[in-house]
Length: 105
Image (cartoon, rainbow, N blue to C red; front, side):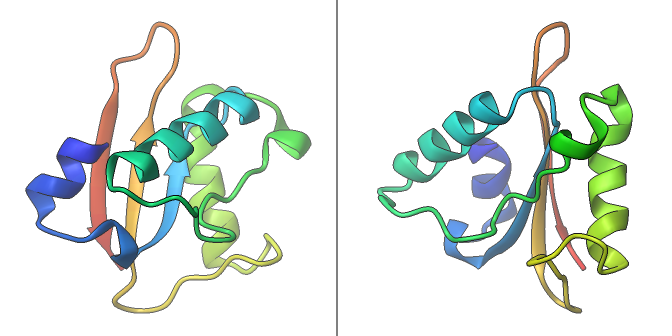
């Protein structure tokens, strides 16, 4: 994820949302905490990482697209996107390659 952000030439502070695979909330929170620590950031922005695992569980490859759809259609309270926002998609987990992509809405 850090490599992706660095190669995109953006500052982590410019990222509006991080859409990460929803396998384990505690693991995802830990990953995000370490990511921000790598940039010397002690505070993680509020609502940076939408979560829906409580409602849908681990829906495998559908977790990130489902999250994005919920945010785009205002179905996840506290989360929204606007034209020009930068978002980070990341897939992590057992049996999965680690992948990330930065995207400007």
